[in-house]
Image: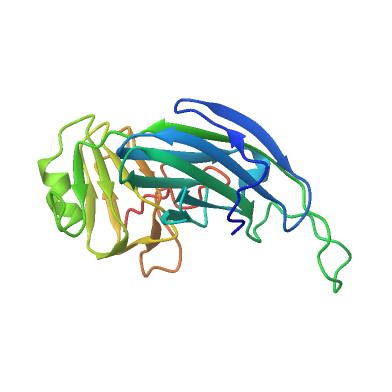
Length: 219
């Protein structure tokens, strides 16, 4: 990391700004002030695929990492924070001639910063140790935040309007199938790596480029 965060752009909670990484190796830094609490960082746009994010305090302490376009972090206190966005080697990259070293990169993207509110939290020393336990307690419209870890469970999403959100697909994995109540339920699933053990996924609720981990599997 560049300890000086030279050239950082100011970003405030609730803002969405656009940017453009022109070549491999370029780094964008965003500087913002925030109190303790949950925060969500989101990259959007055709160039967002292949970018990575890292969130750190002003003293360089890392608060969160993501190899995808979604990151939820628990800020430890009022401080100056820096969000680093950098090319990470995904399909947003424009390759040069096959066989030669990659020299081009063209990533147009938007970054947003929002406070994040969770109805229930899953993870070590959180409200629930298992995702299924949180889902049993959830009511329509609930948001369940799942902290980093590997969760070996059969997940049932049966309540309309429930959002199941992983902290980052880079660090949060579900090993098992995910079953939904029916195809009309409004369910949001984001921020996970999902390994169902099947040769191909079943029912897909949503798929957005840059968020390849929003599949709900029917078995």
